[in-house]
Amino acid sequence: MPAFHPETWDFRLEGLVANPVVLGWEEFNRLPMVTVTADFHCVTGWSQLDVTWEGVAFPTIAALARPAPEAGFALIKAEHGYTTNVPLSDLMRDDVLFALKLDGKPLHVAHGAPLRLVVPQKYAYKAAKWVRGVEFLKEEVLGYWETRGYSSTADPWTEDRYSTPGQETPGP
Ligand SMILES: Nc1nc2c(c(=O)[nH]1)N[C@H]1C(S)=C(S)[C@@H](COP(=O)(O)O)O[C@H]1N2
Ligand SMILES: [Mo]
Image 1 (spheres, rainbow, N blue to C red):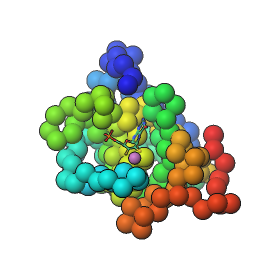
Image 2: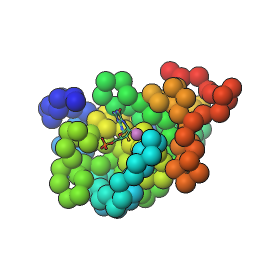
Image 3: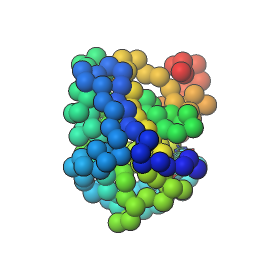
Image 4: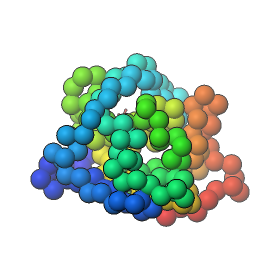
């Protein structure tokens, strides 16, 4: 689990944006917060029901950077090179957030402290722990599990677990 140093931690919004942003820890914590209660589905079959997260909604973050009209995709970047890709249309929702708290308490490092993404409508490999930024992209770039055969769309309601052989797009 990565060490957290608040003085050097930053959060970067980069790529196809009008305004590239680097936020420090205190700046991030001054952003408006929301609370979302949602179920959490791992692709391997377990779910954790009714998890309450508190943090900054994805649309609030995107508004700081102002993605270009042609930016249709995001690559979420976390510590140790973990990445995951999500179409922007799936992120620009009020239930998608960068979470600082879990069930009313600061996130434990095992669950992604200081910051993790939560995308309730997707399998949990999209819920990047120890997240450090977002790259906005015109074309889809696959993340860590997505380059290893897991579905890019990752819809738990249709058990959309694996990518279709032959239809993969190239990774980073
Ligand atoms: N950085 C990072 N985030 C990650 C992962 C990972 O390996 N590294 N695993 C994902 C997967 S597959 C799941 S199921 C959840 C598990 O979250 P939890 O440890 O809080 O239960 O984290 C997701 N986020
Ligand atoms: Mo998972």
